[in-house]
Image (cartoon, rainbow, N blue to C red):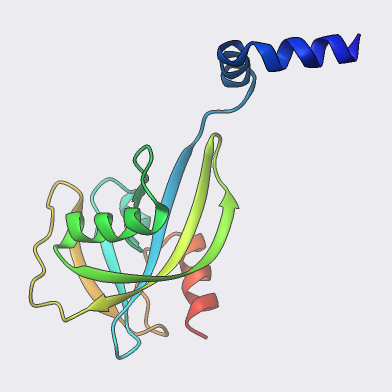
Length: 151
């Protein structure tokens, strides 16, 4: 019986994908970048859409379908601040809230803040902070991530 089922499964490729789509989770990829300047300070954004008491955090966003995660963080930083980053190593991969995975990368700011233009729909403020002088209003996960990376 198992042999017959396996043969049927291999014969009907379009049905395979439909079955797999129905029975497996669909998820989003949340991508976060720990962006540092050459002097070691970290770029933090005060996000408009985040709760006011925890509005400061790393640049972040969701990957578009088919987009490489490294490209996502570079795009998000560029869209939200006008700045350019060079994406480095993968720091952490985590299962997130509900149907989301969270991917964290290191990134280096290319150039200074001279070209910064904030997307005011998403970002209220952007600043560079010393790793030991982070703002109070940050999500615990971002604070822990910065402590891990900037040690």
